[in-house]
Image (cartoon, rainbow, N blue to C red):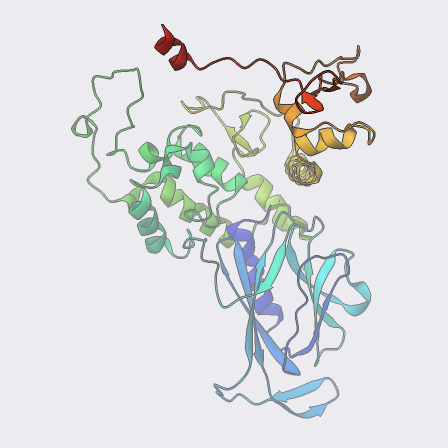
Length: 426
């Protein structure tokens, strides 16, 4: 799954291959993609890329072209504030990547294509086999994403320290908090495993105590501990910037970017993938333990798991590989989507019962309230047969010719007198 280093390398790759290339306004979307179509108003544009955590922006800038010749364009390099500009925000999902190909060799899973003008055969493709990636026109980065852990380290640390004591999410296990992009933008499943393993921290330890040891754990009901005061906990003299986990969030991403190593996300560079495999120390290693966290993701670790292990803990098999994990996450996401779809299609219990009852037999609202007067028969399978239901007795109208009063007499049940009236009579 692409994480911070992969998106940074993808941004550098786009800037390298698109330097000096003029693209036409023809931006083609595949028929199977559910993402929006992109329309650029100007006839020609240049493409520049930048990344921040798990997001990437392509900036399309209007270009004025003169003296068009065969396969050549002379571009006026003039600073014009009136030139049209558009940002496209990408999220790679589970298998997104960018690649430059010829028109005749466009990949099967290319879902957004930018055609070059001065190089007619060149096409910039956004490839996404699993189709979890998204794109949209945006003014800037998403508001619910925090600073980049690798390239905005000071802002990254200050954002965490600002919410560390107040946000409830830091009461969760550190392995789950590391996946929250509001605070750890760019960290994914393989990075969190490597960070916690190299820091020597149990994955299911409370995030607040791990990130700042000067904060004591909250008291639990029914249990009394002698040393619960903050003064009894060893305080760190240095700031949160020197925390080992936060330092590894930065250092490991920079290390991968310098190695130009890429995880499996559709990349065709076998050398980059082999570098990544040799760099891993914990993630998907057969000698390591693993558990499925509350988010449904597998965390790999060694030693103690921590105090906040899920109650119904389960682990993957030892032969579980990186590709199998992507398949498992894909399967969980599809099953969750199908459950949500089924829950929407289901009707309420009352409507469902009324649909099952025959049209000839209608139960009134008063009969539904009087449960004692209605008996239900159940078939051997445990399902109620509406045809076997016995109707409750209704009011009977009697015509008595000898009766001097009104001709129609309604027999009613005997009503019990109020208790207060009984006491007054006594």
